[in-house]
Length: 154
Image 1 (cartoon, rainbow, N blue to C red):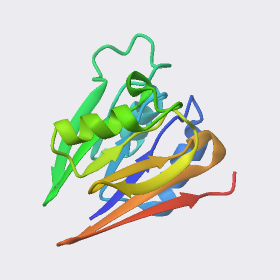
Image 2: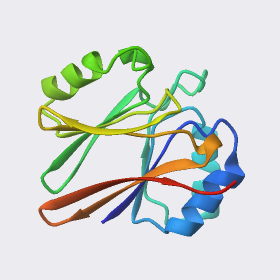
Image 3: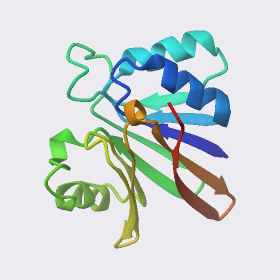
Image 4: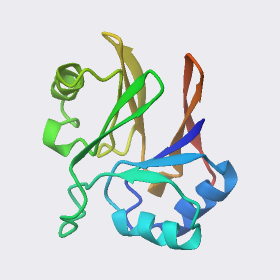
């Protein structure tokens, strides 16, 4: 399964659209700050399957949760924007939350910086900002998971 991971589009639908067309994923995860962009993409691509969370700039989008959880096979994901965990200062709180919820993948945004590291058997993954042409791919094949940070020229 090919999962497109994007965050922080901030109204930049054209780059988001280009990334989606290029990657043609099976599923998409959006980490907040541009929930309307994801809705617009879902109108254009009816087959789009996705999960999204609200970021600090999605002011009045109260029908979208701050955190979401989803599983793909043996991989249990926590999806969040990250502002409630102060990810710009430290990853300690978001790592603690991943442990508390028994997740082995924690996906977040907010910093606009790409990041991947496995810490204490938890994969922390931030795709960076769509505004900068950054995104991520998670490829799951049976018992194997691959995290890739990518860039599209804008």
